[in-house]
Length: 638
Ligand code: GAL
Image 1 (spheres, rainbow, N blue to C red):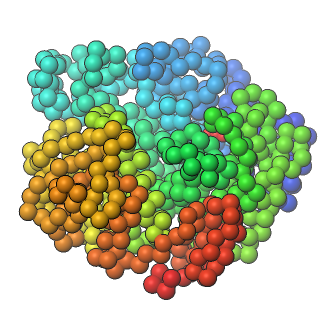
Image 2: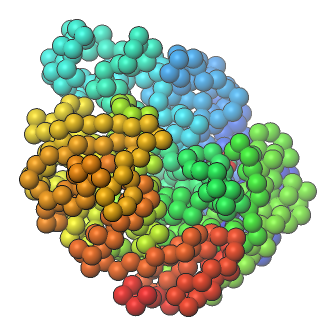
Image 3: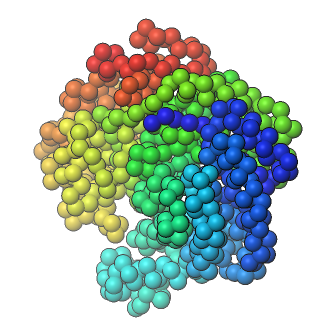
């Protein structure tokens, strides 16, 4: 596969006279793809039924004639104002019961049947008009599901759909009462129509009720997406995709991805560091203008699986954004570094957001490749340089990693429903081991529990709420060593303690007899170095204590190819655990200097330096904010 570059463009924002010049300049920059259309509904249909597609016909023709491949977006993330006159109840409702009003975007409830029909209608009109247009090389459905906290809605439409979903899931009200433990606090129902949404209760709602609502809400996103997929499939042969976001966990991306051909995501490294990563001040200062060295790679690896191996960056940060609390500029070299890093992880396309900075409305402070006055912004030169690098690089092929992490959206829903300890967060836990694996120089695959390929040396499944049916078997078959815990196998699908106990693993004589959670300043020391924090499963049983706390209680128990970890490790403890796992499985570790990351493809080793200063590793010197692309170094030789 030969990676290519692209850009997000809004022809409706600019006079038609500049489109052809823009297109020529894109091509001259080395861009091959252009995404358009995803917010343009009010220009496609200014009044109900008053369709105006001539401008879009000409925009597609102009871009296509210049040699660009077009990604056409369905405009359903921005219903026009008239839609609300037609369906005043289509807005999502927040947890406090307040409607989320018109005036920005994503103002719809995933469960509103009338709006879903409108989306299918506009998608059909577009599919019939452009489905066979030779310039349309991919379709983007909607834009960033779940962004701006839009997955969960406590609206009337959501309520009726939830009741129907419950009736389908449980069949009888008795089955639901049993599954939810309704006898507790007299919460039993007589029929499905009595069940409300789990907000505005006096104290905590029943966690089984909340988890059911979270599963339902995720299914609604899947169904919303599928309604457009079903319309487009017969009308086009071009691949269908969606642009996901970073650290949005409210819906199961693997489920949405199952209906699409390619996963794409929107990568804003500096915005994310400031706005959605917990870390200390030193770390945030060191990477202020580069972004966290693992956050992008984590999502690249995740979306590679969501997209069945096919994935892109649809929106790449090109300069300061407008939406984080602080918006520093990328250090010189970073736009190219982020682009090449994505390629190292298998991106087919890296597309910059956006072509030209908008002089109006919400995002006027958001940089583009061009300033609003048409001058090259600093990122332009780096985009050009990246295009040259990609031409020189040629093909990049991925290979299965030796190590994988299971990532499970429902575990996040479970643990946000019942955190038990304020510091216990599913994403942080998974991300902490991902970081540790990358500090050790490993390339990592991120897997869904639904599909675990064979052939790994090591698989980690931290915080996996429910170990269903044959999962333990599939996991141990797929690798030489599986590490579960903490808080793995802790509940059933219905949020009950399993009758087989916790973690209930057949292959490991190990039980959780008690759970403790700790405030963030408390670290429980482990004999030999490192600590566990936030969460401690107190373990009993005859399996060997592989690691112990200083007080003698087990930190990790193991037997053969299965280990269970009791606490949330700090960085030092993770490093020790990975070193022990490497010893057991024959995995070769190549510890990386701070800020340097390694990614192996079938032919290359990419060395990616997030640090502002040069580093040396294995005889190679890599400048600050730079990427070295070497012939692949076999792990055992480094
Ligand atoms: C993304 C979104 C774009 C734009 C961008 C700004 O989340 O998809 O439309 O708003 O952020 O950084």
